[in-house]
Image (tube, rainbow, N blue to C red; front, side, top):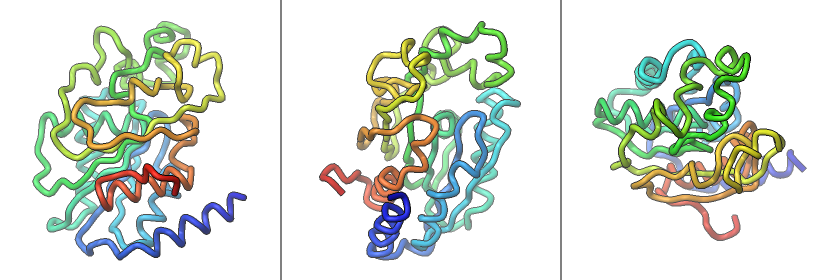
Length: 235
């Protein structure tokens, strides 16, 4: 089934007209992950003609204020100066883009696709921040993703660039879900993925840790980066 799904996705993507040669897509993984988590999506975009920069950054080592320029500028360095730069992010990666763009300008910015972003924070952080080992596992940036005082996402303003948000509704962690407004993906409630000013929004039946690997989600991400809209009819 997985092979068939991937084959269908590849055919659909390759059937689209090629990306403009100058377009570059920067992939930013989530908290406590690496660029390997974004490999499947990055490969689809690369095969369709986009220049790809799949960035790894030390998400548990620094606060968001330091991670944002570290990760994003590393991605920009891999894109040709004349390219239109898009972003495909998972979780914390989306907050890094928002933080960066609130303080700096990317003159050649294209579209920003966010997978399961805690745009309004996550109540899981509020409930478990004092739990032994939480900071060790999630780092300082993880502590900044709550919904109360000190929440970096809540300090950020509306977006004034093209943003597409994909939220998940499936969870494999009922313990964490009990702290969240349902529906949720096990880490973030659907409602808290939204951000004022976003261009388009879609919900998919996937969980937070695996949403970026879904062929359906990658197809939706590809559609938004290419057209600025999701496929709201059944793909």
